[in-house]
Amino acid sequence: MRDIIGMMGKVKEMQAKMEKLQAEIAALEVDGMSGGGLVTVRLDGKGHLKSLKIDPSLFKEDDVEILEDLIVAAHKDAKEKAEAVQAEKTRELTAGLPIPPGMKLPF
Image 1 (cartoon, rainbow, N blue to C red):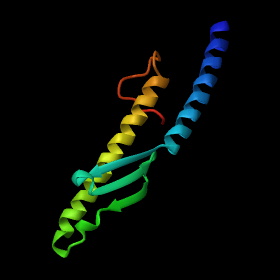
Image 2 (tube, rainbow, N blue to C red; image 1 turned 45 degrees about the vertical axis):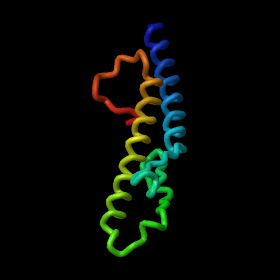
Image 3 (cartoon, rainbow, N blue to C red; image 1 turned 180 degrees about the vertical axis):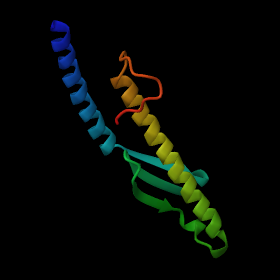
């Protein structure tokens, strides 16, 4: 019976840590760049686009496709960085827990 009570305490502790982690991730802001810094995007921890900066030298009619590709690449860069930070924070939180491989947290 003590094991169950102890386990319930651990579950509540883990839940509090998970809520804190989710708040940290939501507050996270990550920059992604492409074109050697000509295009920069900022995403929040949930992957929402917060800002976009484009170097004025890219504003030429014949460069529209290049600009579009650079925006997509910068967004991908920022999203990958945000996911890496999220994965690292989750790994730190769940260290030592018997979580099945491939299970993603937070749910």
